[in-house]
Image (tube, rainbow, N blue to C red):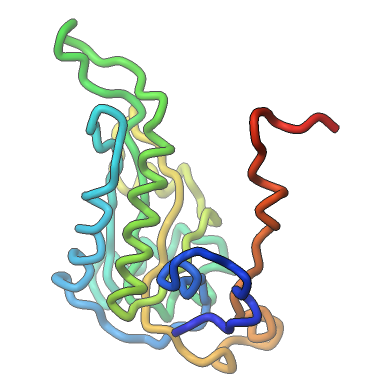
Length: 199
């Protein structure tokens, strides 16, 4: 499951970062609850402001009672390939935190940032353990929020599709050609000394 060197060459990033990518070709393999929880455990150790840990992972494994429900919220395009995966993890975060001094709650401005960090660790741990992941936002957020039973003070951000990677030719025509790592913008396009460039 390593990315072609030509797609990721010339970078000084660690190999475990460069080799992770987001395939859509999965083979219908089961993942045990213990194996899935081992991936989510990595997310538990992410850094967060004041250690508030706002992330929440709600999961379903294939061939379990919740599987079809989790698939049902996906847009048809994403369902067409995600239905072959092993698990779907919906990623949410609590946008407020308990205010123990004043006996209430207050806004947590970094809840989404912190949850993104936790999600990346889950994906890197999955890659390390031999699983492929593909994060998606293409699902009915309102239906999923309700179906997951999320409280009103929680935001639903994305879903992570997890499975054993299959060969690209298992995908429908049109998708198979796209089954390769994506490139990234040059560092100079996203990193600036001192201030954001004008113009």
